[in-house]
Image (cartoon, rainbow, N blue to C red; front, top):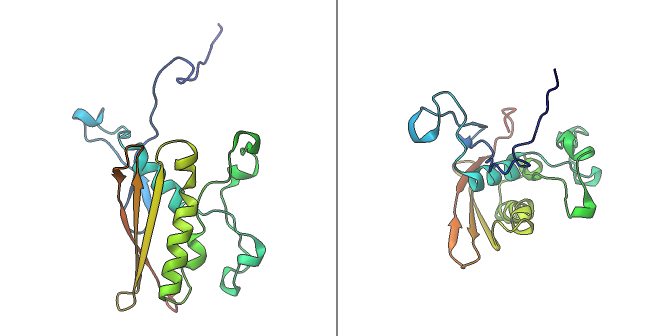
Length: 178
């Protein structure tokens, strides 16, 4: 018996990545309840832009040694695939963000500004791949609540807003949290 595997993309089948939903702390795959979402119990695949944003912002990018602070204990993090699956000749770069570096910083307006800058940097693959033409990120520190609110606006070729998610990034210090 001979078995031939043909990747769906090579067979001309459009395949979307499974949707990821964010509950404020962790991301998880979205499971279909049936109907228009696909078969019950299967993975939804209807929101590729939202999924890309969540993956790019909340996958920990590898930090350089000089970016680490004492509390990181030398852990540079990063996705293992970036060590062997990045073809720089095709314009590829490691994916993810370094938002994790800010989780224990003092909650200030300066930290919020750095978070917005890092979010824009992490989302640049969306521009390189032509999914959006412009990204604008804003972050505001809510000191009493112990969080930073990050708003990301993505704009399409027509100049209109294509997607505008908001994330509340929690800051915890002495309790061993984030």
